[in-house]
Image (cartoon, rainbow, N blue to C red; front, side, top):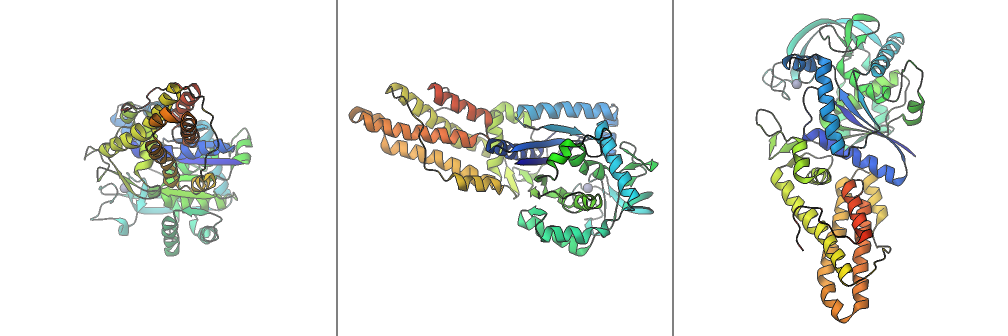
Length: 472
Ligand SMILES: [Zn+2]
C-alpha cells in the first residue's frame, strides 16, 4: 500500500526549534513504521520561504531573502540529517517547480470563477501572517504574538470559501476526512457551524512571494502558497506535465500538523482542493503545544532549546525517544532538560542498556549460543496502536517488554542458576535474548541507529555500552 505522509513546511524566519523537531520526529517514526510494514512510503517535509516576516528578517541580517532562506535551509537540512529524518522530498517554496504549480492552481481557480476582487480593510498580524477579527484580539493585541496588528487597506483577490464550507463539513461529519484527535475535530466543526468569511488569496503590499498570474501587481498569499506544497511537491501543475508522483501518492494519508494551524489545514485547504476537483487528504492529525519547564517557549523568556545541542548531549536516537515519551501525542505537554535526563537514565541507560549488556556478558561467560525464538507479545495490539497514532501507547508496550525482562532476570538469577542447572540457565538467557531481539525490531522506527546497534550486538555477542551511563 502507498502511504503519503507530510509535515507542515516550516517557516524560514528563524532556525528550527525543538517543537519543529517534535513534529518531524513523529512523522519520521510513522514513515519508518510504514516502510517496515512494507508500505510504499512518500514522506514530505519542507520550508515555507515567502512572506513579509522572512523578508524583514533577511533585511535585518543584511542578506537577500533568497540568501537568508538558503542559510536557514542548510541548517535545517543538517539538523534533519542528524536526527535521521528520512524524508523522500524536502520542498522549498522558492523552488521554480513549486512556484509554477501554485500559479497553475490560482489560474485554475480564477478561471473556474472561485476568485473575485474586492477592496479590503483588516487587522493583519505579521506574526501569524493572517487577518485577525476584533474578537480574536486581547487588549487590542494578537494573543499569540502579543503585538498590535497592522491596519491594512488594499485591493485583494478573494476565494469563495463559503461555496465549499457545507461540503467540507459534510466530508468531516461523514468521516471521509478524518480530523484527529476527536477534540480537535469538534473544534473544527464548531468553527464551521459559526461560518467563516472568504479569505484573500493575494496581497498587494507583500513583495517576497509568488506573483499572481492574472494580476502581476499582487503576490499570492503566503498561506495559499504554503498549503499548495502538498500537491506541487508531487508535480501537480508542473509545466512538464509529469504528474506520476501525484497520481500515485495523492491523496495524502496523513497531514501531521500542530493545533495552531489546524484551521488552515482542516477548512481552507480542503475547500481549495474541492474547488480544484481533487480528492481530500484522508486524515489530518493535530498534535498539541509544548512548554519548556512550564513556560511557553519564547526568545524573551530565553527558554528556546536548540535541537542540535540535545543531539550533542544524548545522541540523535535518544533525542527522538525522549521527545516522544515526554508528551502524550495529541495533548499539550511540558518538557525540561531535567526530565529528559531522568528518562534517559531510567529507560535507556538502566532498563534497556543495562539489560542488553548483562545478557551479552552472561551468554559469553557461560558459552551459550543463543537462538532467538518467538516471544509472547501482542503484535496486533502494537500495530493497531501505531496505526491509530497512539505512539505513546506503543512505546509503553516496548518499555514493558524491557522492564518485565529486567524483573524476570532478577527473579531467575541466571548467575546463580549457572552453578547448578546449566540447561535452565540457557533457557532463561534465551528467553531474554528473544525478548531483546523483538524489542530491537519494534524500536526500529523510533530509534533506528540504536535498534541497528542492538541487533549487531545480539548477532555478534559483542557488548558495547551505547549510553553514557552504564551500570553492570
Ligand atoms: Zn499573531
